[in-house]
Image (cartoon, rainbow, N blue to C red; front, side, top):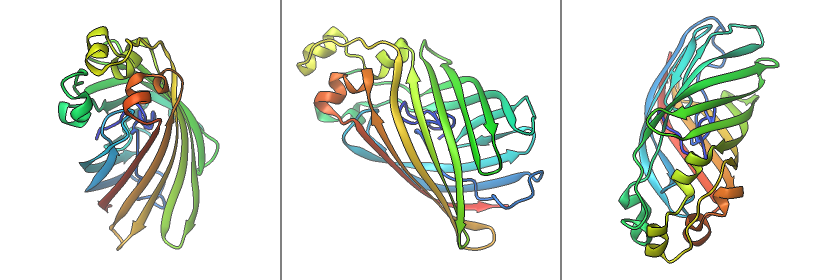
Length: 265
């Protein structure tokens, strides 16, 4: 991805992303802090058919993660970050990611052709992060749709868990929000759509819309290869959960799982 959904806008850092979110631990945790790391692979992600959907779909995803200490990172799981602060504890700068939309087929027979499909979009903005140590950090980012009026934000906390054998794993908690334009784009229902699906029109305002807990793990199969696994559970609330799309046709519970085979060096 640079991929993310409104329920994982990456880790909205990353989270939706993300995403999205939303998704995989970088398999180089024990490398020297000043050494660039590179990871490439491919996998599949089972994700909600659309933001708020009760059905899932399988999405093939590439896996790319290039981390340049003191410069930034580009990742299909976390998006693009460019560190302009370069502090020992504080990091921050530019942020970018890719935001999933929804297609006619993904909306399914109940909503397809009745509710607007949404094209994927790029989003760009900034991030700020404080690392208490090498294992725990907190931060947030804000971003704006580069081809529309939607604005998105996230607050997150990351904790790298103690290794189990050679398995590296971590937990992340994040909350995500949107402005009114972003919320209306994904969860609003205009009068013609409401008539077509038999609900009342709905125009949500800005606010926080989801909370997400994600577990990431990397299971090595050799010195340079391994499987990256992620499980993300998000819960919609507020204006997103009150949308007729979610209340009558979808689910507040949003689960995303990812499995990828990765080569790193």
